[in-house]
Amino acid sequence: MKANAFLEQAQNGRNNYWRYLLVTGSLIFVGFWISLLASVIAIYFEGTDLNQFSEITLLLLGLIPFPFVLLTLWVGIRFLHKRSFLSLITPLKHIQWGRFFFAFGVWFVLACISDIVLSLLQPGNYTWSFDLIRFIPYFLIAIVLLPIQTSTEELIFRGYYTQGLYRMSPHLWLPLIVPSVVFGLLHSLNPEVGMYGFLLTIPFYIGFGLLLGWITIQSQSLELSLGIHLANNMYASFAVTFPGSALSSPAFFSIQKYDPVAALVVFFVMAAIFVLIMVTVGKRWFTPPCAAQEETLSALPVE
Image 1 (cartoon, rainbow, N blue to C red):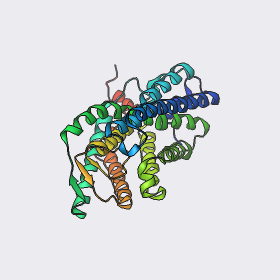
Image 2 (image 1 turned 135 degrees about the vertical axis):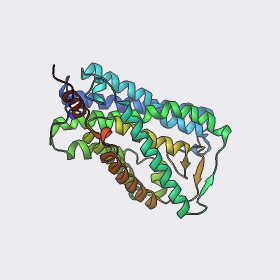
Image 3 (image 1 turned 90 degrees about the horizontal axis):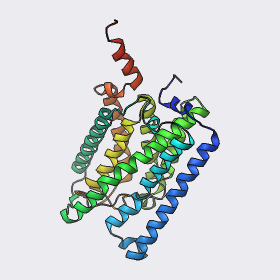
Image 4 (image 1 turned 30 degrees about the vertical axis):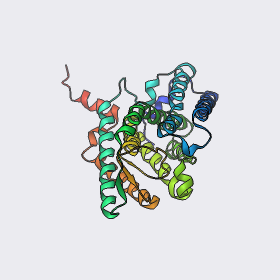
């Protein structure tokens, strides 16, 4: 495997195995106890029947641990690993926001097109369900917490563990496959997995993780994956929802009968189109940041 400036960020600072174990344990500990505390508070106010919980309550239960987990990760990187938190995102000294917004826009548009096509193929399966009174408070909370949730997951799986596993093995399969599989399996408790079956739903999460991991490694930075992940979750929250969705929401449209096989096929088509866009018209955003920087420097006149 060729030198990768992003993966090699784990060579900086202090990276003994026990530090990774301690940070991992801290992330699990904080996430578990914040989730438990939030659940106790929700039960106190809304009872023990989860089916009676409001959409706002379910949203908060799902997302409220992430700011605390993100803070824990920051503490671990800065004070235990003794390296820059920015190194989880890019080997440069600044975030390339153009990459983030390009990936966000492309994935969001692809999601829109895919649902338009499915709605034409499945007449009557998509219904307008927008309710402004329900939508506004949900939107205001989600627009703050969703970026924290998706960023936390990317920083942990495509940043922290992908870089860390590269230190163990310079081969591509370990830093790409292991975080993606773990990322997918951690979604096993999502309601759609129980409703539609493990074998029909988990492949999407693992495939999504593989796509994000491959893009991160190839582009040698995290901005593209951050944009895709946020676009995916925002679209699922605000545009289209379906029975059993992990992000039950007052979206604009509701799918009456969700087909997990069709959804999986659509995802792989979207992923293929996205990669094609990135290696053609979006090549400037897909170029590793260090290489792009070298090209810019080489173009300057010699004095």
